[in-house]
Length: 322
Image (cartoon, rainbow, N blue to C red; front, side):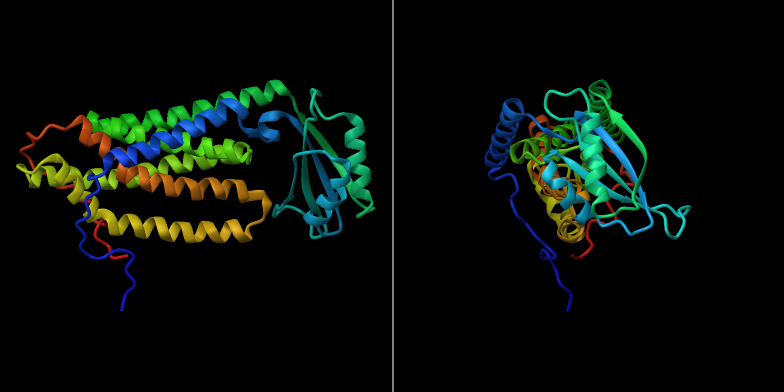
């Protein structure tokens, strides 16, 4: 007996309440954008500026002890990560301590760096500090600009790809769904004031790739069914296509979420923000592939004069039982 996340054959009407689904998305986007404009994002060291201190010791790195030793200093956003490298000696234990620039300061002061070193020596007298690097406001501003360009170029590349592979209506629907996912992710980070750093940008780009993969599977089946059912209304074809790929969509999303939830619970503070962004992105990405991208395609319409059958269409993995 196999576990099925959804029945083998479904006939759910995904467009009977399309105004409700788009209304929910619109409300969430408005709330997210309002939060973004009012309180902005809680930028991490990568975007705010700060200092990275490299530590070395013969004793194993205890991240929790390091963090506890630095808490009385009230340094704000402090990130501590252990560095692993196969070239390190057996007794060479390396960590990176990142400290954000304090309010009103261009960078972390020398007194603050000295206080950090003193605090860490109380738990490990043998610790050394081979390098100290600072990221100023100018570099942080460039990182923000570069990150925005990276997301924009990724979405533009998706637009061109879908346009060439399908039709321009498919491309518009897919890109609106991607923008929807990115905006909602930025919104939830602004609302909850979760630290936003370069790892979150990596998560956003991953979300774009995951979401477009889901959307392409649905659109590929839509294109095949448009050729197969030439007299059916577009809404019927879209409903049929989504139902036919629903098993695959749910199986992919749920199994990915299981791994991400385990990482969120057990992975520690270092990757928690990245994993949270991925979890949220998987949820809204699956939602947008079904309700947003397809609804935009329904609104725009698509030509129905295809006469040749596409042998490459069909999504051969769409009917896998979940």
